[in-house]
Length: 449
Image 1 (tube, rainbow, N blue to C red):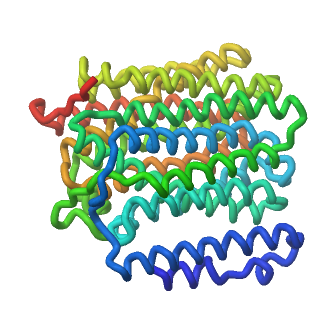
Image 2: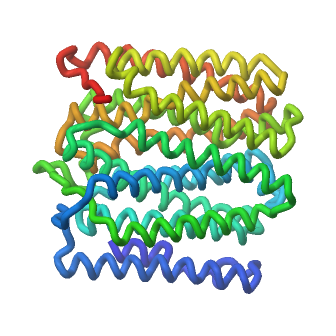
Image 3: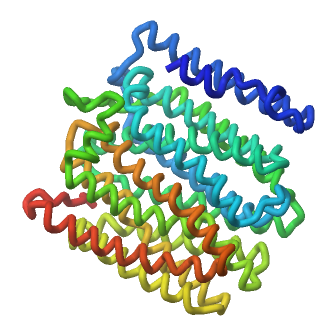
């Protein structure tokens, strides 16, 4: 593991390859790479002393739940603020929509690689260390973005985000599955709703701060401080034990699930299209509202509405799944996304677009956490591999989505590119029906309220 990182990132001294950067930027980039190097050496030393696969320290379910919630909130803060800040960052970096969409491709590509192949890494160093590693990378990405001056530097930032998102997604969803198993209840929808809380408040506050004259650099520094606090807290919270079945670990476990288990493959495709719809809102909704004449504050408020409705959808989705089942819950989501897509595609009215954004938030709220919980119940004992398999397909959608929408937007218009929302809704419906045909009725998982 150490050899791969050393030859790809750690010893690629930025002064050698990025001579056009200022001294301040070079100092920052060097510090980031050395931090990466230090933590890699640290977790290798931990493994040399024995490492761990299963957490044996006493743990408190309320404390772990609060930490998981805080991590998802930080996810939302980071992505929610960036969703508003892109309208300010793109001009500052002299990037068009196509270049922005192409460079954001780096982040999910790296995340997919981590989610598919890092199961063995997590097994060796433990979920606690992999979580810390991911959080450090996310905070470092926000800090690096505040110093970015060129599209090349933005590509470096996108890589840091990819490492952070992949490591944290793999860790936090797996820890949540462990928590659900130990407590014999489901909270995946609720903790994923915490993402929406962070995104709502950060998008509102970010829009307000921009209106007050704050620079996007200052806002990114605030995000870094929040991330540092969560990293510190994470050091003192033991995780629930992990139970891994024979053959469930290793670099190829996630891929084996995708190839050989049709239920996992179908669940992952549901996650793929739900994430595609969510990515449309995260990357393009504020830009679309600004094109329709929205101010920075209104754009942030529209994005906050999207995340508020998504929060409500996730908080209520447990009851929907319990009452109607996993398949019908996904069908409801597909209908909402299709309706939102029609409204977005065929109206130029700003307020109707904001309402459509809210409907889209309801549509994308349930499928991803629902598939994670359903997968854990249908394929027990493989939480790390299952989390990697399902979430990797979500990140593949971020690989496909941004460049596709960016290129179509430059060739036609952003509003026409967003016709893709309708396609997302239809495909989600088709895979929901596919899940109904391959899942035995007695095996269909239900969700505790």
